[in-house]
Structure formats: C-alpha cells, structure tokens
Image 1 (cartoon, rainbow over the protein chains, first blue to last red):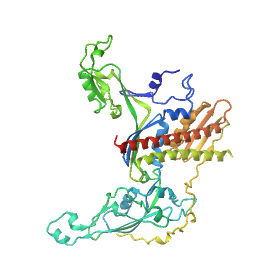
Image 2 (cartoon, rainbow over the protein chains, first blue to last red):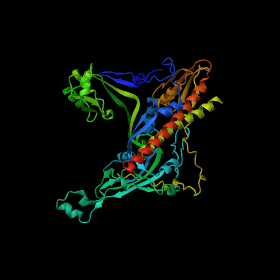
Image 3 (cartoon, rainbow over the protein chains, first blue to last red):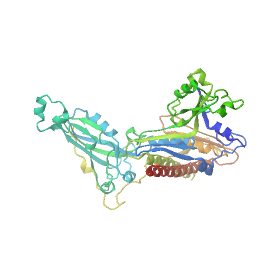
Image 4 (spheres, rainbow over the protein chains, first blue to last red):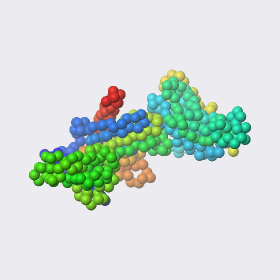
Length: 372
Length: 135
C-alpha cells in the first residue's frame, strides 16, 4: 500500500530555476508495481471535483481537480475551435462610398461577434459551400443563413455647415450618422427564424463596436449572410476571447525563513501569497527546532498559492533558494473561459464537454461500421 | 467606386410554416468521420487511422486506453500537420481484441464526460445559489 505522502509527491510537477521535472502523469496500470491504476469510473467520480471561483455572465473561472492533462486540454481545444457560433460569412456590398475599402470593411464585419437565441443556433443547419464533389453546395434557406442589413448614410446636421464655417470641428455637432456602430446592423428574420429568434434576435454581442467612420455624402449599403461555423475553420467563429487553464502552484518551505529574509521572501511573490506570522514561544523553545532563539520574530507562511504567478523570483536569491521548493499540482486545472458574447461562459464549457462526448460516440459508430 | 451587385434576394426560399416539411438535410455535419485499420495490423496489435481528428481526441483517447490493464502499448501520432489524420496504435497482452479495447476506451471517455458535466453543473448551481443568497 502506498502512503499518502508518496501519492502527493507524484502529483507535483517540480519547478526549478531552469528546468521543470516530473512532468508526465504516471497513473497507468503497470507503472507502479503492486498498485492498480486502471480506469475506475467510481474512483473518478469520487475524486473528481469542480470548484468555482467566479461566474460572471461572460467570464468564469473554475477549477477542475482530479482530471488528467490530456482531457483538460481536449476541453480547452474544443472551447477554442469546435463550439459552433454564427458569424457573417458572405457579404453583398451594394453601395460603399466610405473611405474604408470594401474588403477591409467586409473583413471587419466578419469579425463582429453576434448573439442570438441558443436554441435557434442549435436548430440552424450547416451551410455547405460548393466544392469539388458538390459544386452547388447548399441553397440559401432560412435554416442555414441569417440575413443582416447595414444601411447608413452620413449627412450634414441642420446648421452644421454654418458651424463648420465658424470653426467647429466636433463631428457630433456637424454630422449625422458619422460613426457606424455594430448596433446599426439590422436583422431580417426569414421563414422559421421569425418564430425561433423572436425573443432573442440575432444582434451584435457588443453594440458599441465602431465599424467605420463616414462624412457627409458617404453611404454604406450591405446585405450580409451570417452562417454557422466553427473556430477551426476561421477564428471569427471562435466563441471565446480565449479559454485557458493553468495548474495550481505549490510552495513548500523546507527550512524556516525568518525575520528580514521572510519579508524579502514575501516580496518575491504577488501580494497575498506569503504571509508573515510571529514565531510562538512554544516553537522557539521546542528542542531541536530551527526556530530556537528566534521567538517573537516573523516567519514566512504560505497563505494562498492561487494568487502566485510562478515567476520563480525567490530562486534568484542565494539566501532563499535552498529553503523553498516550487511546484505545480498536476491534476488541478484553473480554467478561465472568456466568452465573446454569443454563449455564456459556463454554458460554453458544458457544450465543450458535450462535444467531446459526441466525438467519442461518433468514433464508436464509425468503429462499429468498420467491424461490419 | 461604389460596387453594385444585383440583389440576390430572389434565391431565398421561404420555408413552409409546418415543421420538417422542408427538404432540409440532416442536422449533423455532413462530413463523414472515417476510421481505417492500417495494413499490417493483427487482432492483438493494430494501427487505426482517424480522419478529421487531431490531438483533441487523440491524446484523450490515448490516456483512457492506457488506463486499461490489458493494453501493452498505446500511442497516437499525427503523420503530417497539413493533413487532418491521426494514427492510433494499440497493442494488447494475451488474447484481448484490439477492437474491444478501442470500444471500451471510447465508452470510458463518454462516461468521463458525463461525470464532468454532472459535477460541473452541480458546482455551478451551488455557486450561483451561494452568490444569490449573498454568502
């Protein structure tokens, strides 16, 4: 039977001044003689844990404890590249006399994140572009395309020309519609979209995105087709500003760090990671204790390693580097999911897990077909 | 110069009001996932080729299959980054079939996802309730 201390030691990735040690997970059957590390769903259910740190609508931070790096990375990759969203794909530029070139303007439109009813998004079908096997591709229908319009024209305000003559330069006082914002995009629901997107129509997730600037006489008239896609195809379809994880850092103080050294040690880390505590009389008087004679002085104590950014600053100082051991817990992933506005962050993670399950099941079906 | 395009509104077809009556394709992606057994494979030592897969499924599947005590060897590789193909090699001890091992691996991965989903939902709801009650 292996002791808890050994199990804990195996879980720590060592972080040294120039190297990282003990990186790979070793919980495979046959790796450790006498131990059984085979897959056990009940063991996983018992040891796996989720802890939330913050859960704002579009920004959530949570910890997954007891998971392996390969699965956590799979979730992260799916979050970035395979959760479907809707973004503008085809644009028909009917009139563009603005100073922004057609292609630049269209590129900007594509990058605008859109939000809408999630059930509507799930219902939407994929639009197949024509390719070698199927030159026609899909036809444009209400189930695969959302139509959006942008029609805006800049004109002089009443009395604006007089103000300009008098030296006024503030565009807000001279022109109407001189800034084109994402909120000026108008959704035109068709067919079944009228009912499915009734409560939550397709609109820009951030209405204040500045698309273009106009001056009097310049006009933009574009008809845009938004389609469902995934981040792997084009980054505009990625539902996350980013999704990332880090491992929980560990700090082990091997020998006591006392007095001015303790203060220096605390300054090596971000605020709140290391705290200072006075050495009690009992610790100072215990025989063989290294605190002997230092009663009343402050010693360094680890308080909250989650705030640590692992800069390894303490390893740069000769008097501190032998007294501390840095590491990371291999199976504690602190995820941070920042959504662009189409999905909510917690829904995004659930969708990512669902997609991994769908992948596994799709493979199972393919395998079954292969066996036949 | 203004770019003028003919209005293509005419190509839009309004779907009929009733559900499912329109000639819509299946809601799943039309791309077919293919699994192939590479030549030279036996019942106990085989290499599979997955199309349209990458490290996302490959590494996770490798981990789960390695957790199977009947597996002597399991590894995955991506032969060339420009092609979306993933090779997975499984070698088993004794007389265990590679196909059973792969199927068990895929099942275990699905179970793992279920547990993650359940625990995440519970933790999320608890956290929201805690936040709402102001603790």
